[in-house]
Image (cartoon, rainbow, N blue to C red; front, side, top):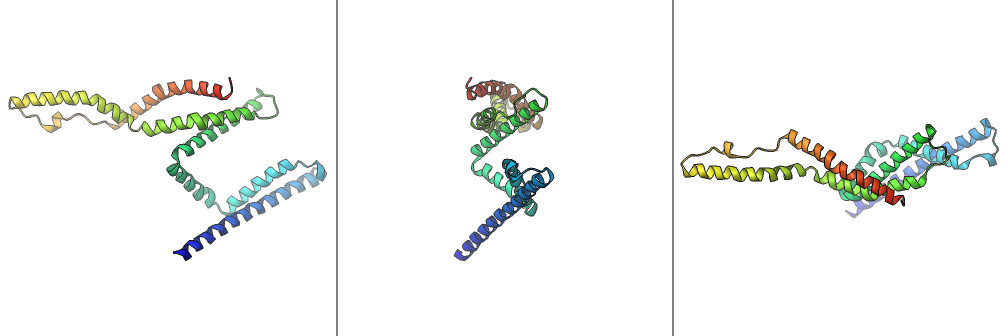
Length: 229
């Protein structure tokens, strides 16, 4: 047991350092090519080169080389690890995912505003990005998680509440008939089951008329609160 554990640990660290080496190798190559391009093709001096952009190119190149050498990271490992996080830490994982999604959505909106000329500032509004990330993580994410965890049971709860009065009425009729020697077959006396169309329709209606109405108010209030307005 100890030998197998040690072997697994060695294998894990070996894989880790191999991936680090692949990332660094890809980054060095991409960064070097970018420096040479600016120096040779564009005629820029070494001091004039924007090394911040070179660093971004190097990071992208390292990631691309890493994924190209071991595509399982993207195809198998990342989805598996994300599913594991959802299973072990559902609230935190879904909340952070919602925050990232909101921030990416706002980043896309800002990019479109700049492309269409509605926003002439050269930089992106990082405060606005932070507002949407914070709102998505702290408010929207937990609300979505709780709602979608409970929505599957909501139609059954409402249906059973509705059928309870009908069930009592049927039982009283059956008891009245039994007193007079009339036997009502069980298939006639039972209440109907919740069918699939009613189940899906009730979820859609609840989402559109209950959750969406409340969430609209929460969204504008929450974003205003996070923006300090």
